Length: 108
Image 1 (cartoon, one colour):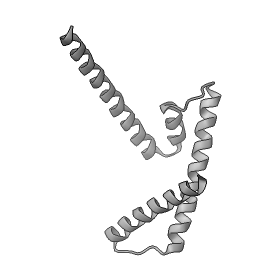
Image 2 (tube, one colour):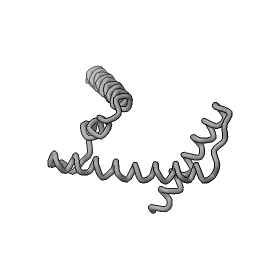
Image 3 (cartoon, rainbow, N blue to C red):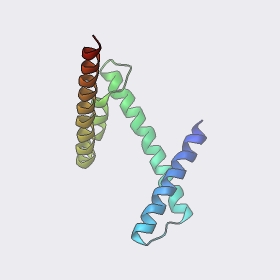
Image 4 (cartoon, helix red, strand yellow):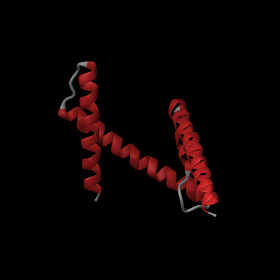
């Protein structure tokens, strides 16, 4: 299972490096892609452990958006992006609830 995750990360990092290489007219060696993949995987492991600990500290068994925001607090651009996406999700959820109310109101 872990090897499949590592392979998936490596594949995606390779795809991203290829996009950057085409866009910036540069090349990435296989060793560079492997190093970026390994660093990315290790950082994701750290993020997962941190998220788990944030939820546990709050006496919850489920990681929620507040935990993710707390994780992103050291990167202002990432925190801003996550907050923006969270607001979009809240608005989408409200719109869906309104549509359901209207549908259920018209069927009665």
